[in-house]
Length: 332
Image (cartoon, one colour):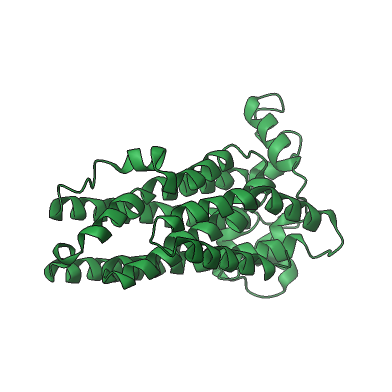
C-alpha cells in the first residue's frame, strides 16, 4: 500500500493517507479505500468484464444515476469500526439481557392483558419478518456500495437488524411459553402474509428487495422504509405498549431506536455528501426516488398503526409526520 519506488525515502503511512499530513486515525486505517472492485469500472471483478457479476456491478452500481467523483471521501460521522461496534453493542446487549432477566423474575408476561397479548401476537412477534427483510436489503447494499466507507455503514446496519431479529425471536419463545393458547411462535407467518395490518409493509419490502440500482435501493431503504419502520413499528408500538402496561416491549423498542438513530446519522451524512451541489442531478434524482417510494411507506404506516387501537389514524398521522420531518432535515 506504500510507494516504495524510492527505498531511500519510505513513506511513514499508507500512500492514500499521506495528504493528511498527520497520523491516521484507526477509522482511516481500517475503513478507507479498501474496495478493489472499483479499480476497473468496466471489469469490477478480476475475472473479466463478461462474467455476470461484473455486468451486474457495472449496470447497477457504476451505472447508477447517483454519482460522485470520489465516493471514497465519504466518512461515517460516528467513525464506527469493527472493534468499537462490538464494544458499543456489547454494552447494549448486556442492557437488553438485564431487561429480559429482570422482567422474567417479576413474572412480567403473565401480567399482560388479553387484548394486548393479541396485539403482540399480531404486530410485535411477526415483525421479525419485517426486520429480516430490512437486513437482506442492507446486505445487498453491502455488496453494491461504491466505497468501503459506505460499505461499512451498511455492514453495521445489517448487523443491527440481525440482532433485533434474534431478540424478537427470543421474546416470541418467552411469550409462547407464558401464553401457549394465544398463537405465539405459531401464527407469525400467517399474520405477515395475510393480516391487513402487515400488507403495506410486506409490499414495500418485497418491492424494495428487487430495487437493484444501489442509489435507489439506499434511498428507498434508509430514507423511506426505515423511517417508516422507526416511526410506526418502533415509535407508535412503544407508545401503545406503555399505555397497555407493557414496559418490557416499550424498553426493547426504545433500545432498538438507538441503532436506528445511528443509521439516520450516517444516512444524513451520505445524503449531504452526495448532494453538495444543490443544483446537481443527485438531489433531483433522490427526490424523485423518495416520491416514488413514499406512498408505499405511507400505506404501510396506515396499516400497522391501524391495528394498534381505535386511534390508529391519529397514530399513523403522527408517524408519517415524523418520517417526513426526518426527510425535511435532509432538504427533501
